[in-house]
Image 1 (cartoon, rainbow, N blue to C red):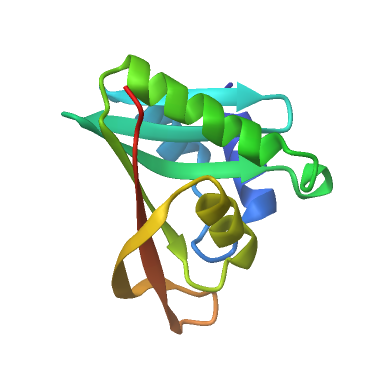
Image 2: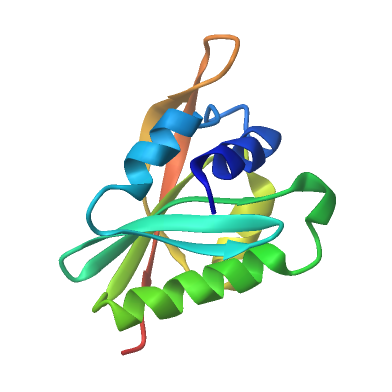
Length: 138
């Protein structure tokens, strides 16, 4: 998936946290330890850090939400993490993103922390992030 396509899909999904730019995706995709799982309607991107994987972002075109694409991308992302040697996976999500929180909890993730005032909204207020983790079957 091209950086431009990633940025376009990401922008259709997010205001808080802010959508990432094409340049940011280009930089990430050329970084070591970054990997991406793609679908025509979305993607999941993360990185490896020793025995841990981190889901940096997952995005599905809004008109395709509710069709299991996000769940399938998350599953593929986890399998790839295991293949790369990860023992556990971490992610963070805005506390008001109920759909993502429901996906993660139903996929076996547990809350393990909170980052107070982590994200800035378009209006300048702050929003906390909930940190989740999942032990991966190896």
